[in-house]
Image (cartoon, rainbow, N blue to C red; front, side):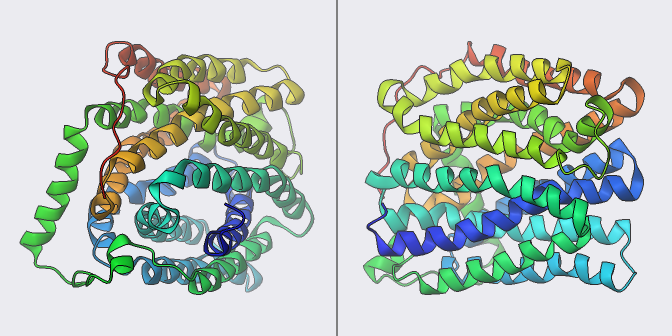
Length: 411
């Protein structure tokens, strides 16, 4: 993949953007917790970062298959740069408020939905389905390697220059991503590559409904994809609890100060686990059916969340978060790669955003429920209770058609 100039340009821009996003991922909940001291209000950040998928997932998927994918992705990068930059700007002017932070988190996540819908189809078109798993592995390996360093850097910057000013880094990273996308010298869709005319941007409402229905119908007919999507709700619910309470967990369970730079290490440990997953996935897919990987991974996801909840100190927590994130992301990446392999190019945006909308739909619920539980039973018990969701998915998986082989769809 590293000899493919178009892919490398895409990779460079996305890697810089991911570095900024990792910093924001660690710093934004720190900022909210410093402003409120509330587990529930901090967990709302994680909810707001996923909620837009439930609202915009279906239309975004349909429109992404009609729009110029490159232009849509660049537009989303520009919007996110402006939205994220508004937080440090408001802080510098002394007018930053909690609602401002929430609105910015929601708007940035909304722009990501549309970017993601286009990106789902862009990468298979950019590299070809025969190199898709290798490209996914290369992208995720670099992203997660960056994620090992960036959250710790974000925690350090938040402890020195302040949480709000640190977000400037993310705003600038979106600008770099937009420029890189402009420079990719290859079409982002098979229609564009073949010279076929891209459908009109504006479609009648009836046609839009029909296109959304076509994506839903394809997802429902593919039994393995449908099963993984439904089971993904439980995975996302428990994951939302862990992600939404990471900062609260660090302060209340591990007794770290709110401005302790070591809080970023918890995010870095998770990123290191994600790196391990992205490197392991290509090897596993050569030895095991894709569905079997998820079947094995789900019980481990459940057990490791319980272990994280009971961790006695920082070092043990870091090790367990590494292991949990490795298993958690392995399940997610495996599902994404499978969907992209079986989905025709013309349906990539609709099918993948719909599947992610359903699967990720558990994340905001998990974050909010865990935040509320923490106020009553404490963060450790809240995490343990949230693990029941992925435990339910693990149990249901044994009675599902996950042992079937998966054919690759024609473009």
